Structure formats: structure tokens, C-alpha cells
Amino acid sequence: MPQPHAAQPEPTTAVARQAVLRGVERVRRHWRLVGGVLAVTLLVAAAYSWAAHQQRRAEARTWRAIAQALEADAPAVALDRVVERDDLQAARSLAYAELYRMRAHFDAGAVEQARAAAEAFLNRWPGHRLAPQVRSDYARLLEADGHWTRAREAYQDVLGSGVAYLQPEAMLGQARCLEQEDKPDEARAAYLSIQSRGREEQWPRRVLQSAQLRLLALRAPEAQAPPAPPVGAGPAPASPERTAVPDEPPARPPQTTE
Image (spheres, rainbow, N blue to C red):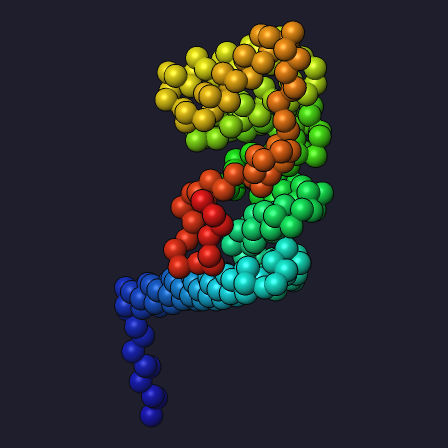
């Protein structure tokens, strides 16, 4: 007896089934893509978190090392070791170690090493917020060592930084260097400019008084007044001026004398 033929699905049902299967496949591909993106995002976030954690640890190690170095019998030598430590090279606070090292060497009478530390700072962190102060200290170090022309150019860099609290000493330093370079007319003009600008902007009294005294000496050559003493000569303090370090993080090593 002949077997009855199996019922064939209607064409519309087959088309619908194929459409559903294609839709399911598209959803699967979409979620695979979403899953891949999510996995990459999580990996990036984990890597960033790990890097931030390592950075915090490096900063903490650096500040501990700075604090210990400042309390050592020979701070300059101890800070040399801090700056050279391989495990601290990624720390942003290493800039402070370089600044303290420069000043510690100067306080120890090692002007050449102090100047080298200032140069190292400016070469590595030229855009750091402490850079203008370091440039000012560097100019004073050059002046203290008798490099008048280089010191005058360094003072000009300080003036070009536009940092207001460094302007008076930079202009006064430039005028002193002009005197040492035997340029009395230019020095006189510089002192006059200091007086004019200083009165207008209310600069410190000692800056205006220094300019006035040097002007009197330059206007009376018959008195054979000696040239302006370089930084570090005579009773004047030789150490770079301890101006406040702007925005220095709290609870850190002892500050240098303000």
C-alpha cells in the first residue's frame, strides 16, 4: 500500500524560520562584540588602577627618602643618592629632591655641584611649577661663581617667566651683573628702571634701597665706590633666597627656611 507523502512546510514558514535564525545570529555577534569591548575596557581600567597604585607607592617612597636625607648628617650627599635611585625615577616628587639637593650643596659651599643640580632640574623638568624658582636660584649661583654674562642671561629667563614675586630680585641681579661687566651706563639705566617699576608695583623696600645705593655710587665716580658685591661676597647671604615653594604638598619633609 503506497505510503502517504510527508507534509511539506509551506514556503512562508521556511522563510520566517530563516529570518529568525539570522536575527539570532546577529544578536550573538552583537553580544560577542559587546563582550569584547567590555573585556578590553576592564583590562584598561585594571591597568590604569595598577599604574596609579604604583605611582602612589613611588611618591610615598620618594617623600620618605627625602625626609630621611634632610635629617642626615650630610644632606647633600644623601639627596644625591635619592635622586640617583632607580626605583624613584618615575616619581613626580623627585623634582623636590632635586631642588633640596641644589640648596643643600650650596649651603655646604659646593657651588659647582649646586649649579649642576639646578641644570639637571631644568633639563628634566623645564615646565615644572618650581622651574621659575630654580631658574632664579640658578642665576644667583652663576653670579656667586663670577659668571656675570651667563648670570645676566639666566636672570632674563626669570623675567621672561612672568612670575611676579621673582621679578624684583631678577632685575636687581641683572643690574649687579652689568656693573661687574663694567657697563656702568646700562647698570645705571637698570637701577633707574627698578626704582620706577618698584614704586609703581610696590616692590620690597630693600630692593628699592639697594638700587638707590648703587645709583648713588655710580653717579659719584670720583668717590671710587666699589662695584656691587656679587652674590655670596661680604656679609650678604650667599644661599639662594628661600622663597616659598608654591603649592607644595602638605605633611611633607621639613621646608627650607622661608
